Length: 405
Image (cartoon, rainbow, N blue to C red; front, top):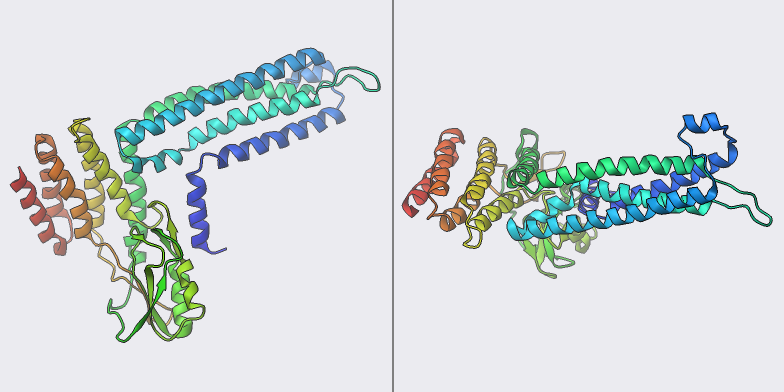
C-alpha cells in the first residue's frame, strides 16, 4: 500500500473514537481467554493464590464480584462518553467547529473509553467461565481471571481521575491553541524545510492539455506527488495540479491537467489526489492558520466578547508566521531523478499566510485595543525577522492595521 494512502488511513483512524477502544476490548477478551486457560491448567494452592492475587472464594462470590465490576464499568463508560460529548459540544460552540478534529484525536479520552469497555468485556468473559457444581459438571472458579478483573478496576479508577484532570486542562484555550500551533509548525518544517525545497522553473508547458476530473466532491487533503511524478516521467509528460491542497473540488471538475504525451491510465490519475469531506493537516498548513483565526474571530464575536482569548490565538499565529517567514518559498515544481520537471503544484507563500492571519482578525477586532496592539506588535516583530522579500507585505499589513484603528 502506498505511503500516502497509509498516511490518510492513519489520519482517519486517529480521528475516530472507535478504533482505540475496539483494540483494547479485543485485547481484554484475548487476555480473559488466556487467563481462563491458565486457570484450567494450573491447580494453585491457597498460598500461590494469595501471591498471584487470585480469587480464592466460591462461584457465587466470584459471580457477585464480576457482576458488580461489569455494572460499575458500564456506568463509568457512560459517564466518560457523556463528558466527551459535552466537551465536543463546548469546543464547537465556544471556539470553532474546526477544532473538533483535535479533540477527536485526543488519546487519553480514547484510552479511558477503551480501558473501561475492556474491563467490562473482561468481567463478562469471566462470568461465562464461572461454573457452579451441578449434574455432570464440577465447580470451577477462575481465580486468576477474577483477581485480574479486580486489578483492572483499580487501574480504571486511577485512569478516571487522570481523565478528569486531563479533560479539564484540554478544554483551556491555551491548550487548544498550543496543540494547533505545534502540529502546524511540524507541517511547516515538512513542507517548507530545507529538504522540501522544490527544483525547477514554475512555467507551464505550452500546448494543449488534457484535464482529469475529480472522481468525487470534496476538499483536497493529500496529493501523492511521488506516484504522479513517476507516472509523468514514464510518459515523458508534465502533470499540473489544478486544485491546491485545502481547496474544494466539485465532482467532475478538473483536478489535474496533463501536458505532453498521454500518460498510462490517465483518467485514473485523479485517484492520486485524496478528497475528503473536510480539510485536514496532512498536507495543508493553511488549515492550522485557519483554525487559529477562527478561534480569534469567535472570541471577538458579541456573544463571547473575549479579546484575551483572541490575543492568545494571535500569539500562536505570530509564532507560526515567524517560523514561516524564515523559509524560502518553494517553486512549486517537482522533478524526476533526471532533473526534468514533471509535476507542477500551486504552493501557498508567506504573503497569503500573512493575509489569512491578519485581515479578518483586524476587521472584527478593530474596536478591541489589546487586539489591535497585539497585531501591531506582531507585525513590527515580523518586519525585523522575516526574509527581505516578505518585508514589504508585512509593512503594508502594518499600515492597514494602524489605519483600521
